[in-house]
Length: 393
View 1 (cartoon, helix red, strand yellow):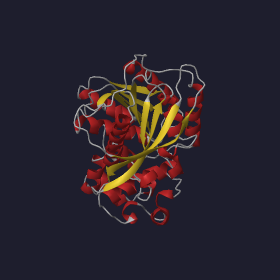
View 2 (cartoon, helix red, strand yellow):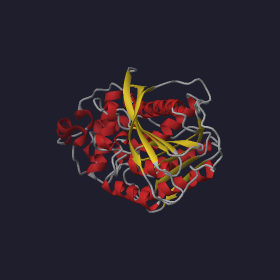
View 3 (cartoon, rainbow, N blue to C red):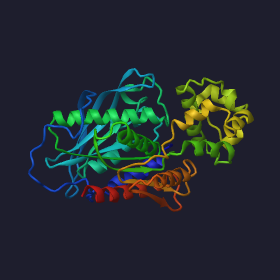
């Protein structure tokens, strides 16, 4: 969910410190000709509208690659089913030997210029994208609906289907671009993301495996600190004292307002929140600053209706955004700090338990002891690199 300057700083340092190390993204020199076909294993769906270069990244690191950056415009679907032009970032390492494709789902951003396709120094698309691309991975990163080319519509925060759909259609556009430009993609795809990106990663993985199996050669997924178990998360927040961190509360309120809109609940703010909080939220929306435990701001009527199951419309919306209880078929890693006070650790623990109960063949939970939402970022990134090295080598 929320990212802040501390997290951006951690990721930037990670790029600099890791710039001399190679991971499993690199493939042995083989002398193979670059294929003109895509890595898809079923009929292609073409979504690419246009692509244009937006610079790149040059590295002096030994055995690393310079990177070419492209802004991709592509067609995807909005929540009403209408077509919308979205955007994303594609990073291509300057090499001729085969490369895997990584789909990077970004974490919560606060302003439009932080979206990946702007390729601004210090942002996730730039730092983490370049970190993997300099090692030989092709990197695709969707902006999500609400940013970049689609910034004229609201971002549907923590909405499973719109995140997964934008991610899938970005991959289709990337596949088309790679084929047209004879980039030597080895057909393999892996997914990764942290925070909102962690949730988006599992949402995209679930969509790829269950709705379009075989369209891509998905080989691995690594999700960090995502709000995977939405029903448990919501019930915990409405019934328990939380940190009262105003930034955290903005994320919770943003999610609630998004679901109220997307699922046509269209309730007055006073249904959810007591005064004076209802008026504050009505005036400022997700930008409101509330420094109290969120449960103390909610009306007794709303809390009771969720707890006793009578608010079926709201509960159905929450269930529709749950990604914790299903059976992934590819190697999947769940990373989470057990001191996370924004997206609580049980989200990944519950996902691991549910997937294990369904006998998923290769799912692991990596507990980052003593780490909170920000401080767990470096361990997640390093762990993901090691995990992908094992899969891709």
